[in-house]
Length: 161
Image (cartoon, rainbow, N blue to C red; front, side, top):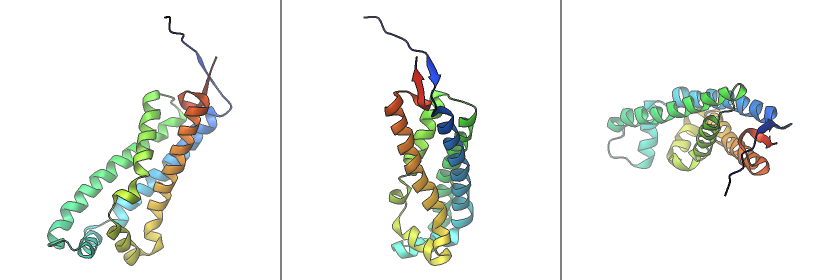
């Protein structure tokens, strides 16, 4: 059976989708960096660990903070890669951006609830806001990207010709 190949052309949605991913990537990169390096610090992590009943919070806080920040840096880099959407329609870029956003959307479930309580106690709602924007926005962007794939049956909202 012969496989048919298709050429792809821009749809009216292609550029809008690229721009949406680009703008979201700017916001998510900044929000993740704020959360990772401004909101989260060893003192906050120690408070979180005390709330969670960890035996030696002061001894474990710096190591946990380091690990948490490593993961945060992966998301900062992943979100920053989304900035390339304005100039590139690579399938690899599409899947990286989608994967980063889907996994970032799981943040509220993956991070211990004591962290959110500690952040709220120390910073109030302002401390939670960067995560709400990045994680909530990642859910929305992921849905937009998935719907686009189903609608156009291609990445980047291109249409087959």
